[in-house]
Image (cartoon, rainbow, N blue to C red; front, side, top):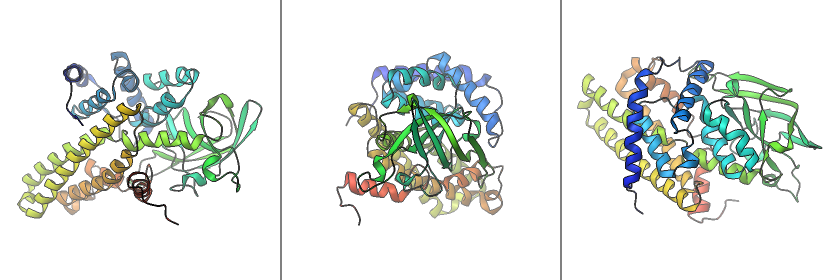
Length: 381
């Protein structure tokens, strides 16, 4: 497979670099990373700048390779990350673009792309995390509405969101209807009566996650993406984006971090340790391979219609572990005092990395997907 860039793609890269060089110096100071209301304001303002410059609609209007170049160049330039727009831009938006009706795309995609509306993800429940299909939040249809009751946990960005990509059970589990077959994917307005959000504070002190309680929330049937009871298939589309392309910018950031760790080690004498040098060399190679895997996944998605395939699970599985190893190495270079400094970005990133083998599907789930869908091994009993 040819992973080189065409002249047109390199021209796009050069134009983007020029635009970033012009606009980034004029951006305001970034808010406290733990201040999500402040980050919403900052992140949506940046998204509006992208929209006005013609870069916001790249996932639909450009090739997947151009989108990859965009993510690579914005990260290398130190541009703002999607932040509070994460779920809308990288999960819900691509899902609606792939599975929504023309009317749904017209309603939700422009506000996502302009930064007018922020989304959160309402998938996991207290007893349905890795086994997501065991979810129990129920939706009973009454005419043109679903009446939804239940609870969600680890709801990403619920504290600042306008909409929620919500998984509900529209048909109870029976011997004739297994748990995967009774789920639907709904778009829920967060200001609907009956929605209660309780922020959860992470180990780093952030409130980017929340508990969400739903008490007879009425959601129009028109807000269902895909057919009733076909939500599991739609969810697999969402998760393929989450596991396949949502971490692209982070891979570039990790490659830059390796170089920064090496500079720090040279400055404080840690570079004299041959074991540390070998570890940094191995991590450099690891993230170079992950970048090539990302290119392969994007090329494959481009060939098959734009949705990442099972290769996204290979990427997610290895990236989660590599990220943890990277920030463990950063802590080693910082030393005991630096590794406990919560004001240091590497310390915060290390705490965040602990969740990566759980978030977006645990590593055990990814191993099962790789074993069954790629290697063709039988399912466990």
